[in-house]
Length: 479
Image 1 (cartoon, rainbow, N blue to C red):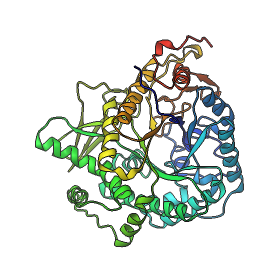
Image 2: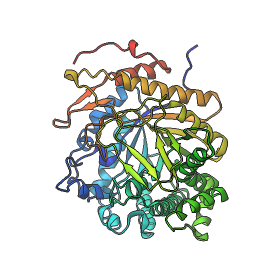
Image 3: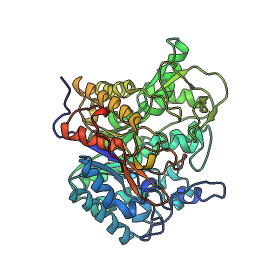
Image 4: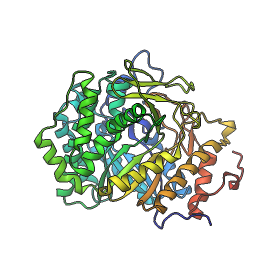
């Protein structure tokens, strides 16, 4: 018998302001750091127009309704609300997000609103971004403004999106500004400061007069030793503690465990650095840990890790040239291919079991999370436009496998409330530009025209029948 999704399961899709909106000079918006960075002479793309969601959100939300979606992730651009990050509130930005949120509800789609999705205002980024402790206060104020303005119509709030991805890009891989490489120390400090900022936002929310729920979104990639050797198991554990356990401890245990601190200190010792959180920070983190209402899990890949004794070496695959990526960190380990696991063109292992394993780990090790949403999952792909008839069966297969992993986790006791595809429409990729597509909607980035992919029609059948269906059941439609 085909498994049904739970009653009231949220079928959603996700977006992010900078990647989708465009309209960067509209409505008093100030610049975030990506605006400056992507306008370097050597840059081949920028976010000036992105997917044009700023202008076309009504059309996009109508498509989302057509697909049977009942949830959408949107983010509020800090720079539309407070253009310089810590100055005056911009009423035009407030008005835009009121209109967007209202349109979500008109289509029967609940907005899940993210406050920080990789888009710190440019002046605050130049002051150090999350390494500058003053920006904890600035973020708290921004969050408070949003709770007061939109709290009567938003029931689900997300403080910060993917802290690990952000710091890995900024301070380890070096493909996000400020383009620092191999500084695990900066990554750890920035993650900790984000945990404090998250705690401040949660506390502010709980002390406000608004109702609703609040949580955080983490990218959680399972880490597996490539062999059962002690050295490989230790390498996998080190990367897991750095990327997963460190922040999960803070959010849901209210403290870094002795094991976690021991691993972080050992990792940092290779560069002569250390980490000692203040008692004041940990008191705040502890105070609010029980007040998180949910966790959002972003999942695209897991990694297979081997021991590694060399110097750090990372080559980022930003073009879709399969087999070009390298990720090896001194004092941690090296990501290696598992010959039994397929990969995307961007070298991301396609491993749905990793999602199941991570959900069950949360269920077992962090029961304080209360409930789970898979807030991003999807396949970056070089879609064939084919005259507007986009037959993206590979994406349908990918989503099916991961939704099946969700169903298995629910069957085994996990409280997973929803799944959000990344992304509703094709969007700008931070480091890949416009050739890496994820959406249910194909976007012609020259004309901003939309075309429904086969995956969108497939999702319509899934939501109608409340169960997984075959891609072969989706009728051929020629546009």
